[in-house]
Length: 299
Ligand SMILES: NC(=O)c1ccc[n+]([C@@H]2O[C@H](COP(=O)([O-])OP(=O)(O)OC[C@H]3O[C@@H](n4cnc5c(N)ncnc54)[C@H](OP(=O)(O)O)[C@@H]3O)[C@@H](O)[C@H]2O)c1
Image (tube, rainbow, N blue to C red; front, side, top):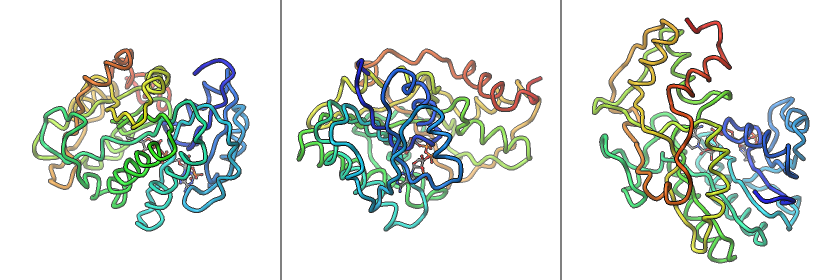
């Protein structure tokens, strides 16, 4: 981000967006858009120096968003399970946001590697087959993320807004993330679902690298939109759970099921043409996650 820029960040209370909001608000004017549906969220964001804008992306009044924001970081997502609502908020809401912020220098739409169809343990390039991957856990998620990408692509062209669509893999850090859920499952003895066609590989990306890579992703924004995978060095669920076991002494209990998401490792060739590779290795990052959230569990 450049000096003096005003940033609109949607989802400032999200797992991924909160640490970004916290850091950016130290140096920039940051507007944070969400419903602020949970008590205390609005105050938490204000305490970071973020100016809250309470809007529901499904049908709220985007007139509350100043027209002259320089940069949009669109992290907000809803997974209520209601198709009508989730498509309105995630897809139409994203396009309405592009329209409202048509004077922005760059719009970063955070998508997901969950838009890909499972194709086995092979890295997926941006032209890989799409699919309803996350249906078993979050019925509306993959479909509404795919719809959101299309809505954003259309709006970027229609309103001439330089845009990057970044398909994020597995973000994690002090705010938690998938490896932390696995740690909690290991603690409670709950089975961890994995696809029978292992290894179940993804690209964990530490929150420090999310922040570090945002400027490069914004500089890559184009009309029509640039679509790019977004992740760190590959690791499998099996590997990071084994590492969590080493760190804590807890043992994972895997349960093979074809309903699990399956390997969704992303090809990072295009990403590395735009930004420097992630700096935080997944082992180091996961140790930091446990240290930050559950230090009592470290051996
Ligand atoms: N977490 C992951 O493992 C992961 C993986 C790949 C990609 N991603 C992507 O990364 C982004 C952030 O994900 P996350 O997991 O950090 O999100 P999250 O923790 O579920 O938070 C969602 C955010 O969106 C806001 N929001 C929800 N519904 C809204 C609505 N109707 N109008 C306005 N704001 C709304 C929420 O605040 P309110 O509820 O107060 O409105 C909250 O700030 C998403 O785009 C997601 O698809 C995440």
